[in-house]
Image 1 (cartoon, rainbow, N blue to C red):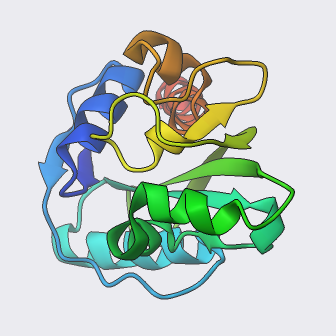
Image 2: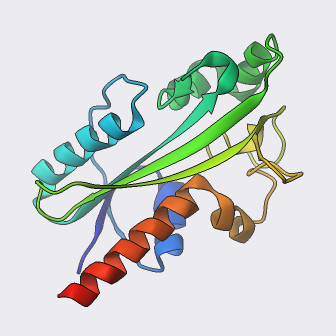
Length: 184
């Protein structure tokens, strides 16, 4: 089966292919992202658009970063916060608050027929810290998972993939694919 992954982010494509142990076919689409703090609603909307374009099995993904002090923000809007404030700006704005706790959530969506939509979530709690490590992948440099001394940006990719929200969502999706294959 040829699985398409609707993303223009090469880092996400490579990471998810590695996590699934399957070479995904990139599908570069300019998907409309609705402005919402509901991650599942956003992923379903993207999934519907992607399937309408390709009419073949497709995966979409979105990752959110929730600061406890900011209620549901930045959430799925995190890439706009990064684009407009930068990582250091986000950290500086958060440091006005006592609580630096955060939760990273990845929602991976899959459909093979455009009607049945399957969502797989991975969640990791942690703290927001001043940028440390690689700045090449979203907000990795400011998120330090609970019970770890390093940010995702400082971690060896193998360690990060094992504990990251994308890694957890991919594990659930891989299990789903395995079970589906056994049923056919």
